[in-house]
Length: 375
Image (cartoon, rainbow, N blue to C red; front, side):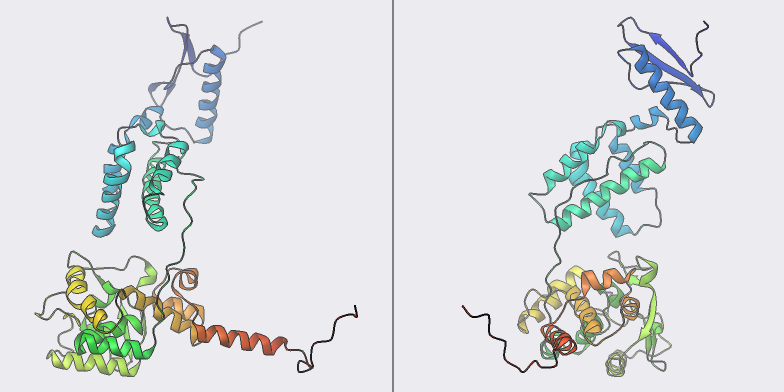
């Protein structure tokens, strides 16, 4: 009987273990590990042969890249990523990933390693922070998979701590008016863009005169002010939008431009600036303007982003359809509009109870409840 010819070759080493190797694309590739038995080496070669036929082959040597080297490649791989996002990712890797995994090779990192890392974060950080750090780690290993350094991403079926929706205050017109008085006319207009239009802080801070359409009663959001001070595109396609603005708020913005001696000819001018006319810087603005005004208005702890949540809740409360609310808020999906930002108000809860009660109300509901069976 003739011996069957196998893909690749196997040789016995002086140690008694077996080494498997094969030729592919003009080069000889050796299995990353040796095997205790010849049958194990042949099984490895059979797997490689199958992967080659399916187009799923990964160079085993590519996985010898360290996590630290991969992190540098990944951070520089997407030039379109926002500077602030890149800095955030770099900080997460530097502080929470590389101290543990930086020296490890990619192929040596297992799902268990990732789960252990996440479990170590959980007691020390909020669930949302853990989720953000894990998302960065997973994106980096997905990059390794996409660039054929790994055949399988170790970030799979990872258990994360359960996150909870952030409770945000539900404010009424009276509280907002008190805050507007505490802020003063110019900064009050800035505040109203968050409460009424649902603008993000960076969107409001990056609003320029030419994005205001006073005749059409609309404004356009297609840029936002980055922390670097430059105007950048929104994070997602949904963030770029044109939508209607209440007449009274447009009147407020008109008055602001008049106070600043701005006209339509000053299209590139920012609508909102610091008292000395400079572009707003979030940290300074929050410390010098927002926090003191909130404390004077009896709203200590209120965040500007809470106004965006308030705007979403108001849209839902007045019966706005989800698609319109999604467009106005610049969300990438309607689920985000409902699940993250919208909060049910007490008034809406009572109204819903009355409507459902009237819909299902029995025709003889005024009759007293029948007595139970005699004892």
